[in-house]
Amino acid sequence: MTVYSHTRLALYEKCPLAYKFRYIDKIKPEVGFIGIEMFMGSRVHETLEYVYKQRKKSPLEKITLSEILNYYTFIWKNKWSDDVKVIKEGMTAADYLDQGKLILSEYFHTYQPFDQDETLSVEERIDISIEGFKLMGFIDRVSVNKETGRLEIHDYKTSGNLPEVSDLLKDRQLALYQIGVQRKYNFDGKDCDIVYHFLKYKKEIRFQKTEEELEDLKKKIVGLIQTVELASWENNFPASVGNFCRWCEFSAQCPSFPSLKS
Image (cartoon, rainbow, N blue to C red; front, top):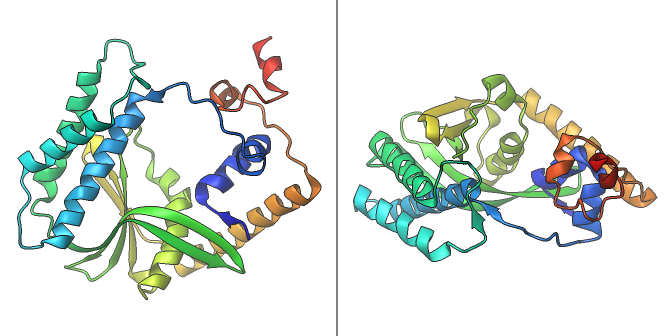
């Protein structure tokens, strides 16, 4: 049985043909380079994962800012490769290394000694079943707030984009994860918070999803999966043409891409 994910379904919505190339034909696109923004974001995520795993493992042992920054610098150097490219004019790799250090320093000063909540899991795979369909995803962190007793689903963002709250409310990824998390940890939907951390802005945005909203999401997810499976049965995956095509990893295989160049 196919196991779906938010990313997989989002790609179908964006371009059915790209979905076919990746998930059905299993074409491995040529990776030209890794953007340094993504590289830096991954290292920050890994460092926060380290922080909360250490906190969970040894709750009485304080973690210092020096330890955090040393870990970040170590994995940066250890995972650096010539495939990582700086695109933004006037910026260097050292600038992005320092950006990550600043993000982690500000996070440390805001949340240390990291005892506002009890971490249940970090980078956890969550499996979700909706009307017989299987979905999965990975969650940055799940915790229980010590003051409120509420379950919290955390997502850490390092991008320079700060979306409107109205756009976050429409995003289904963490709401989908909430369905699986509250089942696993036996929490009611009314006792769960979705928490976005926009690290560059030092901004935390949190909100709740009602049971009615989650039920509506389930119906939409089921409908979307049924559409995908019908497309698979009929082998009907048309290309969606737009500005995003210029950055598509399957442009070499796409019959519609040459027309965009003319």
